Length: 420
Image (cartoon, rainbow, N blue to C red):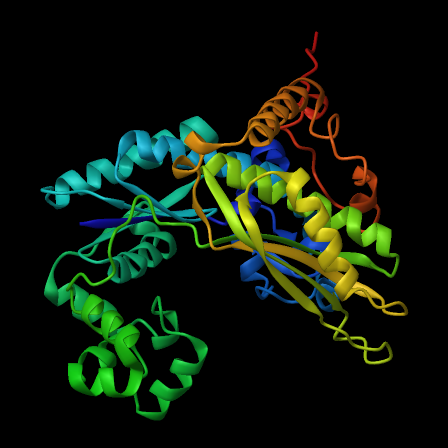
């Protein structure tokens, strides 16, 4: 059996963890630069706040209903996510992390009563260890586990754990599941399925396998069989990382080339840290810039440049000149850039390279370790490349309602004052 573990309203739950006065109140969390709604409390959902709506469009509703607005704090969310995932893995060892707030687990040879007990144990351990509420859905396939999780989360009578394990119940639930709620069915396919009178998951399972493959390819066929309880999407505890990227939209547009270089270097540093943690090396690098496509009064420009490296690397000092070269190709004076990003790909395991590392590569490894020690002792901005100005990015990101980094910055740890 598969289980899908999902944190309830994760970003909002993280905010409430250190601000208990927000419990039972409508709360929303905004995307980078306070742009769009990316997380809503149940109370905010009941007030009709849609997911993804631009913040300025609900300004009046926010004021009328006294909705608390929080800027996104991804350092806090990422740290709490790691804690949640570690507790889950400690309880159910077979785990496949799917996103920052979701993971699949696999349990074998357990009946419904055992699954209920395991699910409740995980919920209680995560709640006690982190304060984050979760829901769990168990089913014979990943696709059905997604549906089971939705029921566990939305229907209070199941106390956050729902098991989908018999044909009759599954059939009834599939009839109640809109086709656009089925995992793996994209927007284009939804329109096509509705054209063929497929409105819910059960409608899809009533078609023949041959018809599904002819009209929706092999991916659609996998979804079809998964809904019928046949495992097609493999469980992979060590899913290979195909690429690692970092990008950010700016609250204020940037035209200065050196500022762009400093920002992309900061993204490259984050990417290199991720490569090092995963034990990977990159063979290709892409850099891209974007103007604001919504501002029709400004000239539009969306350049991308990519290069294959001579040697795979995870070292910022080796990527820095590559990034500069790519930015030189992309940059065009007179444009106001709203977004920038970097993507490394064609990744390989560092283990196959290290035995043959050159002296320069060994020195680079020593420098990486020194940088980590400085960061742990003095903060992440204590040791950085001279070409990068750590303050630039903060000046162009709008986060008017950002909370403190309670778990990752000693200067922002929550202080409790004793009362007499």
